[in-house]
Length: 127
Length: 182
Image (cartoon, rainbow over all chains, first blue to last red; front, side):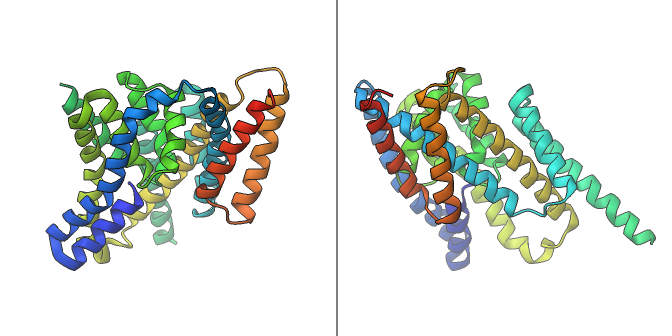
């Protein structure tokens, strides 16, 4: 869920209730909507230029670096326990090598985490 | 009916994506390839474009695919679809946040989600790497690619560089290397 949208909705709601949330969301979405919509007409045309091809080749490398950074950030932001690593590794393998359905993977991960947390709490209560 | 399809697919994407833009790539590529709306290569190319434009990647992608598939109406349906889950959920969260913050069900699900997302991003990275290094044998392109990745990662992790810097630089590198015949 896009962070920008979330922040806009939250702030809008606090300031002016439902309609505030609605207009804030509209405001944050509209500029990019217009830009991309216009751009979509040109994107097809410019692809034929070789220089654009070179540019995209380079950009793909930059994008790969950005994606790797996003993964590292996500790992840093989480408690680095065994459950985390197992779930992350399982998700990675399932999607990368077995083409697993991404939604199913997410639901399973949430369920697994929930089960482990509840089991740990039961164990703690018994002690 | 395509408008409804666009709306529903992006609704699903908007609902299940945790962790922002890049985590959506596996989901978006799975769903859109299934519907035949965009190829993975095009998606990666578009990812780069969206870095240089205003707005979150999720919204950009929805607008673009919607527009390519079904014109202005398509763009609107897809964009509304991807934004709606955030809108509703954040509204609910604002109302209930204080009460359920420490709810164990919520926090444990979120940890599980974060772990899954880390893995999913890894899978996305693998796919993108496939487009960056298509050849199996080692050539100048692969060396250049590896070297660039290492340099970019260094600046991203230790020098607080952001996408705003990396994308133009990588574009320039691509052009230079292209003209050098690599």
